[in-house]
Image (cartoon, rainbow, N blue to C red; front, side, top):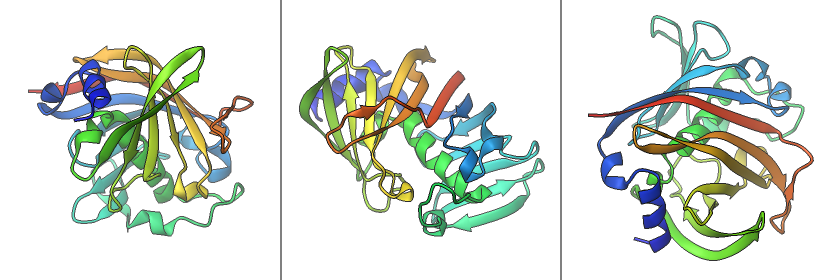
Length: 244
C-alpha cells in the first residue's frame, strides 16, 4: 500500500475498524447558488442520510417532498429511485448518468438526476479515504504542492470505468496531519468543469473522521482556485457509524 495512503487511513480511523462498519447515518445540508437553476431549491434544507460503507447505497430523506426518499444504489445495475413514506417506488431510472441533459447553466434537472448527482458525490465523500482500497480503485502519491502557506501531499486516485463517480481521475490533498484539505476533479455531467472542493472542520464520530463542512469552487487549468464564488456548500452533523 502507498505510504501516504496508509498514514491517511490510520488518521481517519483505520482500515481494520472500517471493515467492521455495517452502516452509517448523518444529517446533511446542501446550499449554494448552484442548485436553483437546476431545479434543486427544495433540497437546500436538512436531510437525513443513510449509507452503506461497503457498497454504493445511499438515501436522502426528505428529498424534495416531505414524504419522499431518494435512493441511489449500485447492485446488478446503477439505479436511482424515489420512494414514498411507505417505501413504495414512485419513480425509478437505471443508468441515470446517461439521462443527464447536455450541460448548460440554465437547464433544470429532474428529481432523479438531482438524486443521482447528490448520491454519487456524497457516498464517495463519506466513504473516502477507505474507498481508495476497494477493488479496482488505484491510488498513488504524486508531487506535493504549496497552498495556504503549507506543503500538502497529494494522492492521485483513479476509479474504474464501471464505477459511479463524477470524475474518474481525482487528486486528494493532505496536510501534515494527514487530514484532507482539497480535492480536484472535473465532473463529466457538468461538462468536465474544473472544480476544487475544500474540506473543513474535521470531527471524530465513533472513531472515524468526517469533515463537517465542504465548499466547492471553480479552478483554472493551472490549479488556481477561484475564490470569488462558492457554488456549492455541504454541511454534515450528527454522524453515527454502526460498528458491531
